Length: 114
Length: 115
Image 1: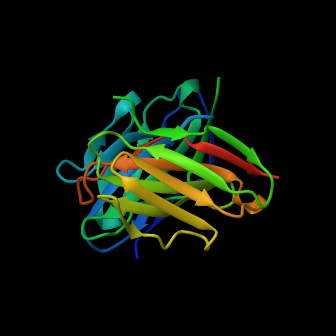
Image 2: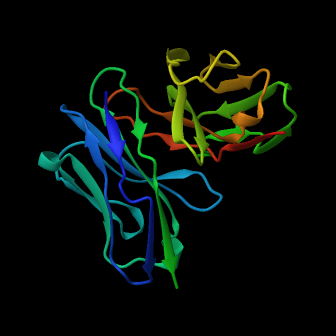
């Protein structure tokens, strides 16, 4: 069965700092990968996704993620964070076949200090 | 596009009462998902439907939980009887297709508090 690990539970950064949130998955086959964001009091929104092609994926709000197949990783990055990026970030993976469901990581809470 | 619509947005009830959560997926989407989010367990998939048929309900915690999708534009998640440990935010999501093209769009959630 597939699983997702987000090692950073809570990250605190100052504005303009660079961000990298880790995401590792365990599944040997082809996968679809996602990052979702949940702003305080709001619902989940899709930040970006990877299905195939260029392993460097660009999403909304200046976020990007790189799929490194050899490391089973899909880390989320942003070169310069803003206070408005304060939110919880969820990595998710889905095996690219059959009825495998979308599996979420436990989330990383990001706090940006002005 | 109205997005995924959930009602009610907030529900406070007493232990033992029946709770019904409602979801309207995005028009044209043929997969629907129910999730529960708690501080302790994070985001958990409870059940999902494809073309109104339940595909995987292995995440439904126990018999007190049931979900239906009578048509392509409506689904309910029912808890009977409710217990305090059911307090959580319940999200509904929908997607177009159930294969590798799947991207789920989430509703605003129903915040449930069982006293």
